[in-house]
View 1 (tube, rainbow, N blue to C red):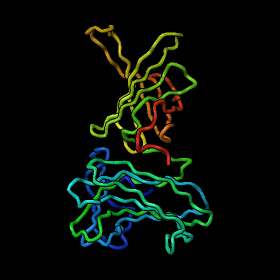
View 2: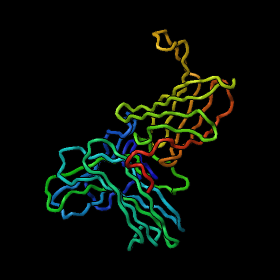
View 3: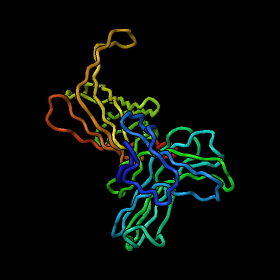
Length: 287
C-alpha cells in the first residue's frame, strides 16, 4: 500500500469528494519522523460515512486478503463516533461500478490507538480492490467528529503480518525446543517491546537467561539482545548487563510469529518459528 503510514503527508491517497482531511504529526508508534491522517465528518449527518481518503489497486484473480490499520478516536466526540476503514472489490480495473464484496471495520472513542483488521475473499472476477477511510457519527448529529488513521494496510493473507500492539504480550515458544521460550511484554504508551528469553547454553543442562528490548513500528520489532551476569539469588549483588546481539520479531497471526536473531561475531541469522503458549488476548482472535 502506498503511504499507509502517512509518514510526511497524505500523498498516494485520493480525496475524490473533497471532504476534510489533513496530515497530523500524531503517530501511532510515537515516531517523530512520521504521522497520521486526521479525518473529519462535518455538518449534519445522515448516518452515512463521508469518505475522505481512497486508494485503488488493480488485482486480477481470487484470493484471501487481510486489511485494516490503527485508528484513534479521542473522547469528547459525539456519541457513536467511530473511525472506519472500508474495503470493496470490483470487476473493473479502476474500482468503478457496483462492488462485488464490501466490508468495514472501525473503532469507537476509546482514546488510545487500536488495531482493527479483517479478512475478505476476492472472487475470481475481481479486477480491482478499493480501500477508503472516513468517520461515522449518528444520524442528525451536527457537531464535527474526527478520527486518526495510521499504518493502513491491504495484503494477501498468505504473505501478511500483523501490526504489533499489546495483544501479542504473553508466552511464546517453539515446541521442538523443550524448556525454553520468550515471555513478551509490549507497551504502546512508552513504545517498548520487552522479552525475557529463557533458554540453554551449548553446554547440556546449563541455563541461560537473556532479555530482548527495543522499539516496534507497524509489523516489526527491532531489538537488542542483552545478557546479565554477576547476580546472586535473593541478594543485592551488583549485576552487569551487556548487549550480545540483535533480533527481530514479526507476528504472522494471533498464535504464530517469526523470531530472527544474530549474536555478535556470528555471520548467520537464525530463524525460529514461535507458537503462542498462552491464549490470545480478547480482540486478537482469528477472523
